[in-house]
Amino acid sequence: MQTQNRLQQYLSLILLACAAWLIHGFIPALLWAVVIAISTWPLRVIFSRKSKLQDTGTAIIMTSGVAILLFLPIVYALILAASDLGAITNWIVSSQKTGIPIPAWLHLIPKLGDQAALWWTANLSDPESLSTFMGSADTSWVKSLIQQLGSQATHRLITLVFTIVTLFFLYKQGNELSGKGLALIHKMTGDTGKRYALQAATAIRATVNGVVLVGLLEGLVIGTSYWFADVPHAAILGLSTGALAMIPFAAPLLFTGVAIFLLIQGHLAAATSVFIFGLLVLSIGDHVVRPKIIGNAVELPFLWVLFGILGGVEVLGLIGLFLGPALMALVVMLWNDITERTN
Image (cartoon, rainbow, N blue to C red; front, side, top):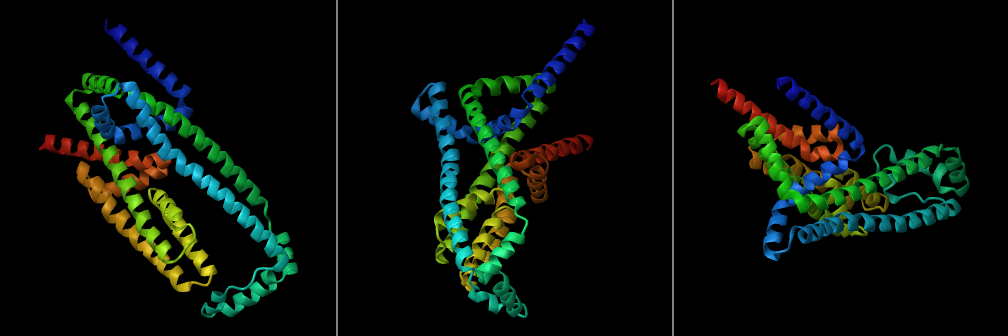
């Protein structure tokens, strides 16, 4: 009997390993769907109770809402990028005919301004010099970059589609799946494993709230600086900043680009203000507000929250942003259980 049970365990492990190998390309979509389902499950419960719909109807509406929130910004960003690409193309064609004039702020740079202005005049202001300069530059990396961006965009869109499909079934059968999952964990590990599973779900939900809400708030606040600086498309740029603020070290790329744009336009004070204000808002949001929201929900110290977010992104990519703090919460819980047991 013992030999039969052992063989059954080995067979189960082999089947699980084969299944994991078979669907390994879809694991990111599965993880994203699980994270979204866990974080939005309280909304699903409230909506189901108030609407009195069956599981299928609730799943359709909840999945549609998430799909709209995910797809609309991406589609709009692609449309905006396409229109801006046309404007950039026209600017390049015009610059090849007339040259690029020297920006007024270039002379204001201490010690280097005059030398930079001379270089600009010799290489960029004159159309013939500009054509020579552009012709001598190696632009093969541009084509490679565009191809990589296209490939990555296609891969992300495919992952997003499978995430939405998986999310529908999680919304529809979530109660049954979670009940059976907790029962299996309890059967294998007892009350401790069940407690750890519930703590992981709480940590994921708290991380999503901290990352998303704080990121959107940072985008809103930094977006006001775009508006005061009279930057074109300030609202869209603010929303994009909020989306990038959810990713460590990503938002500075956008508001630094806005500051450079203002600098090229000759608005030195506005560019400096946008850049410094963006750094200040991100410092407060990322290092004070976000760890506090996540840490208070799962009783996780600030340092472990920070390590979980940064380490999770480095090892697992964007999904690690939400799984990293959950793992740290389980480690801290394990540490507390061991130390209390030894005492």
